[in-house]
Image 1: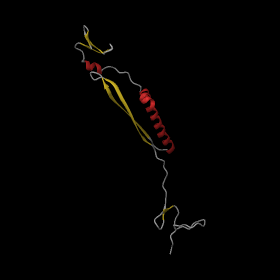
Image 2 (image 1 turned 90 degrees about the vertical axis):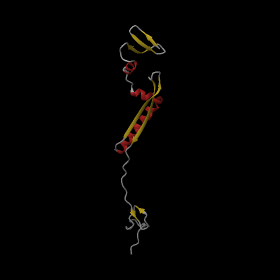
Image 3 (image 1 turned 60 degrees about the horizontal axis):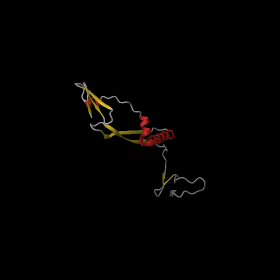
Image 4 (image 1 turned 30 degrees about the vertical axis):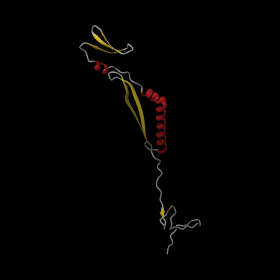
Length: 149
């Protein structure tokens, strides 16, 4: 709805609140809407509101999972958080009145460094921790010991 004043046109929404004002010879209505100052939104408050706090809880759990792996393995870890925002509802004239927010995470945890193991190859190709060419130390015979001729 538009109301005519003596020097300007004022646009009102259906509830009587002033949405935009254009003076004759001034900027176009679209320019007035784009230059409106926005109040900054608190990211932490948004995270706590996303899915009734489940997003914040999920991020916290994954943060602690990566942190624990870094402390346990003394290696480098990474937690990547991706927040996506897209308009989901538009008003007449294209103004965004609702935004859909999605999140995704990627974890990179350090692996536990175990080290390498050495094995001996027996006559039949089986792997063993015991050297097949060495006599058993405490009287036990080594079943994979090669017969020397």
